[in-house]
Length: 96
Image 1 (cartoon, rainbow, N blue to C red):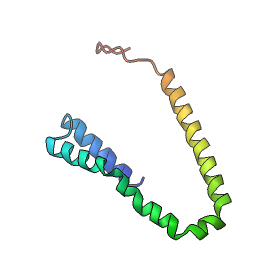
Image 2: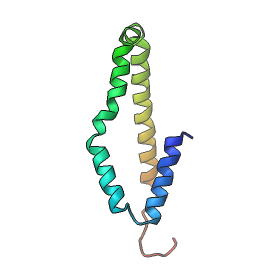
Image 3: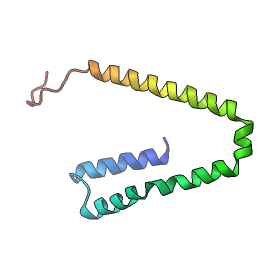
Image 4: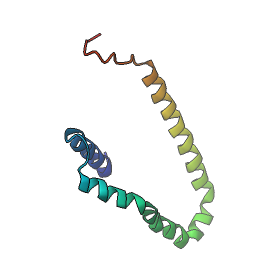
C-alpha cells in the first residue's frame, strides 16, 4: 500500500477520533487548497521537458489513458452496485 494512502488513512482516523480538525489545521489546509494549482507546475514542466518522448510514445500513452479510464469507471460502477445492495442502517441502535 502506498505511503500517501496510509498517511491519509491515519489522518482520517486521527480526525475522526478528535471529532474534526483544529482551527490551526483548518486554516493551514485552506491556505494549501487555495494554492493547489501550484502543485501541478512540476508535472507540466516534466511534460514540456520530455515533449519529444511524449510525441514518440503517444499511442501507448493514449491507450493507457483510455483503458485506465474505463477500468476506473467499471470498478466505480461495481462498488456502487454492491453498496446499493447493502441494507440501509436503521439508526435506532437495534441489530437486524
